[in-house]
Image 1 (cartoon, helix red, strand yellow):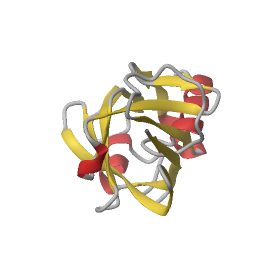
Image 2: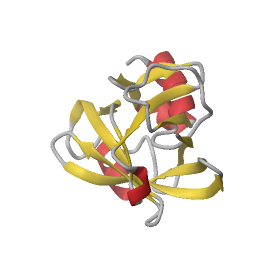
Image 3: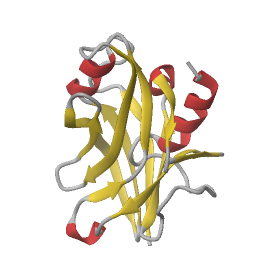
Image 4: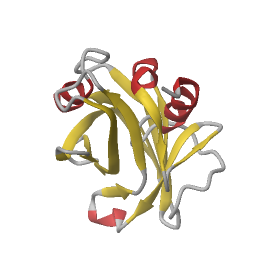
Length: 164
């Protein structure tokens, strides 16, 4: 496991909406970027950030695609996690293309061998102009995919969505 890179990546990526803007090359970012600052629990299972997501000083960064004005904030890139203890029993599990649904208070992702699934719920949501911050909390689906390293409702990290 690449724990040091994983912890730093999630510290800013907070998976899908956590962190503070930091220079990064997450692509495409013409519509904005989501930064995620991971919690310690997330760092314990994180293997790395998948391109075109990137890792910067503040954590993981994911470019926003699609039209956020339609209500769903879609991203490219993803995370590699240690799923060896989860129901899929994959030692290297990829989760890609995160979608934040602010109205439903949930973040979904394409989970390898599972499909699109709810991974995080949003708590402490704050909207300040074109910046949205939230705390990410693990769902039952995320716990099942990863195993006992995390629990439902545990903090996954902090997310910052910066829309352009």
